[in-house]
Image (spheres, rainbow, N blue to C red):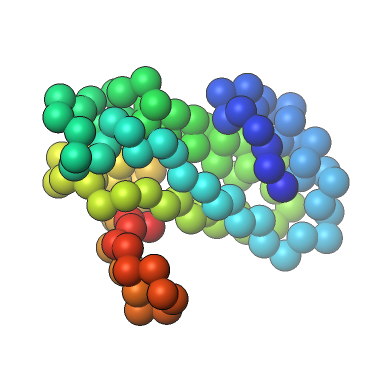
Amino acid sequence: MDVGDVTKVTDADVQGWCEALPQADVIIIAGGFPCKDTSRLKAGRKNLQGPQSGLAHHQPRIHAYFIKHAPCPVKYLFENVVMDNSAVAEANHTFGTHAIRVDAGAVCAADRSRLY
């Protein structure tokens, strides 16, 4: 399901979605955030403090809502461009994860490294 604007997702929204999925075995949250402020190509980038990439800070909030209301385990997968070390460290801290670099060329015709 596409939830639209992540800045507007509320605890009540997620509770309603979870109540509509009483038979779910697992809920997978998949997404990403704009790379404009984390791209290694942008001079003076602000990483997750930038106006576009800063949307990343909504993902842990929404994940916490799902943990609170889901009738089953909740997993998540986020994707973004390969960033410099400071941006990766900031993202890892924000999400409580360790980003893994994957080159899509191993599984399809697109030779493009991404972080998951």
